Amino acid sequence: MCEFFSFAVKKDGTILALLDSDRVRYLAEGKNPDSHSLICEHFGVNEDDCWKFQIEMDKSDVERLAEAPLTVETIERLQEYYDGGIDFKEFPTDYLPRIQFWLNQNIDKIVQAGNLKFGADLKETIIGKIPAQFEVILAYPRTGRQIIIELTEEFTQVRGKEDWWKKDDMRLIIKLEKDYTYSRLFVSRYIHKYAKIVDDTPQLFEEYRVVVYGIAGTRKEGENV
View 1 (cartoon, rainbow, N blue to C red):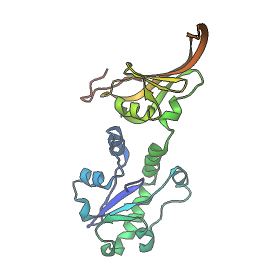
View 2: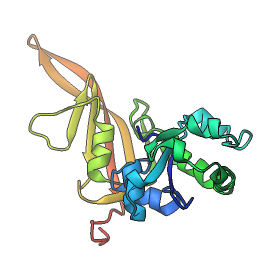
View 3: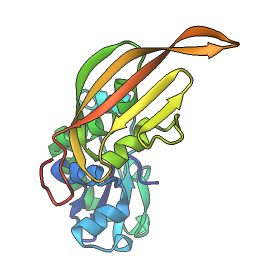
View 4: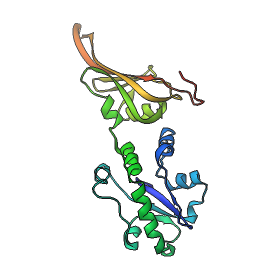
């Protein structure tokens, strides 16, 4: 299933997980850092030669980690998190203290990873009907293509306008280069008024517009734009 939070254990007891800058980098590439196949590929090991584990957590679980640390003090408890790989029956029980120590040592990094996973939803942050202008600092860098996919999930593209989308009385305009990577965005929300002839009578209409601009994007090769 590869949900947050996933890790793998090699036959020699080495614990593998994607944290810190590695997690941010893979998120920026649109990859799932909790994928066991990606974890094992990153560390150059065969995932079939590891025990794979997944401690499924949501946002509230992450918030409670400071007061309720992760525990795997019994083999039965650890088995609840088993997610494939080498048969769990072959797992050495003397690796348990090592895993518990690793979890304790990395609790801050796991919380940080959880905040990346369950931080403020980009769509909820940007899209709204209250006029405003503001900067958005992304939790991790994303390509313009990723941002467009996230923001336009419930919108329909406007015919003949590549960077316009619509939903009811709202228009979303995204001024981003798809292959550039962005860490910051600028958002302008305003009400657009326009006249339209209906049944030979001019009428005034309003639509909400949300315009998204990129700030200091970079090309894939790292050139600033």
